[in-house]
Length: 138
Image (cartoon, rainbow, N blue to C red; front, side, top):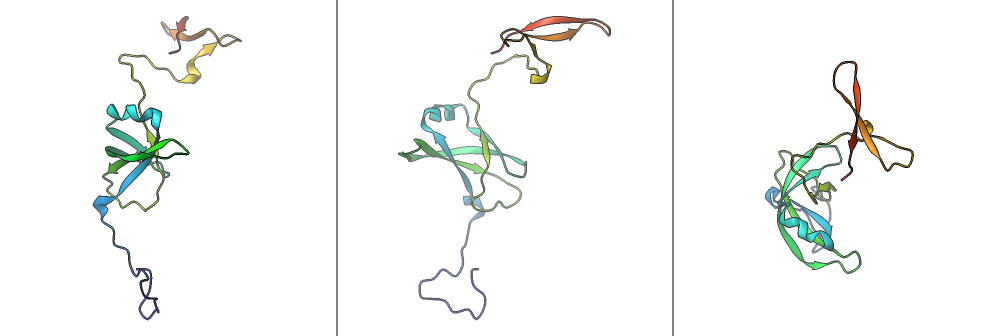
């Protein structure tokens, strides 16, 4: 409700807004060159400003592209246990490529030479011995 009892309102002025919780969706402005990623990203992880993460499902794409930014709108529906406010901005994470059975390391564990062209980690083989193991960036 935008007005209280006894307020004067002009003809045609909006008195209240009714919203349907089921119609809430995020609109992702996706650069057009990444539209092909939607085929493998039917479920998208959304991170809200407070740190909560929600899974969203891609429902549709808008039929037009913004002429200035060359982005296309993608409608993402979410099921949130709590109501979300209108105009909320979230970060979306799309997967561009995935490698199965790949070993990953934190950046802080990787050592490099001065030119940062050769990379390695120190691998413990027992409680007193570490061995230099080469690492390849992919």
